[in-house]
Image (cartoon, rainbow, N blue to C red; front, top):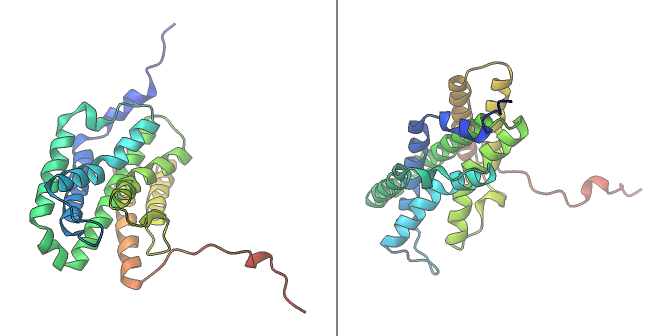
Length: 226
């Protein structure tokens, strides 16, 4: 009897240029963050620039691949490490210019999240997992690097703070990808739609000051006083 090939091998069908583009944007953001993030607790050196470039550029993808039971792509191909490090160097050199352009930083962050969500969705779907897993791992890929960045920098983890929607936007983008795939759209259409949704909703949220909803502290079950 012929055995089916392991589903994990199908993940290689994701175009390499999409993966490296996401790594490059993330690495640039990480390098710029380490250059500008100086406060009473942090004053990062050149090695810190490299570390944050690797963490933001590769962190979410490494977590995703481990959860998929795969050797992380970043450890199988040196182009991932080289791309993250070179992008981190570019982010360091351009940090002051980027820092003066607030909207550009916000747009870069939205692009990072969108690109990583797309890659996460494509790789999870290629592994034969269901829609729920695609949304979950697409979101993990999108925000995982930022979570690791915040932990290393000893900052509040932005993912779980009541602020401008971040993880919620990633979930919305991943859900868009899954919905379009479910009605027969091509990977290209689903990917572009996912990226557009993440980018546009994130930028609108920033421009209009939207905040993620806070927890309900029992008020829904409180009886009105008579």
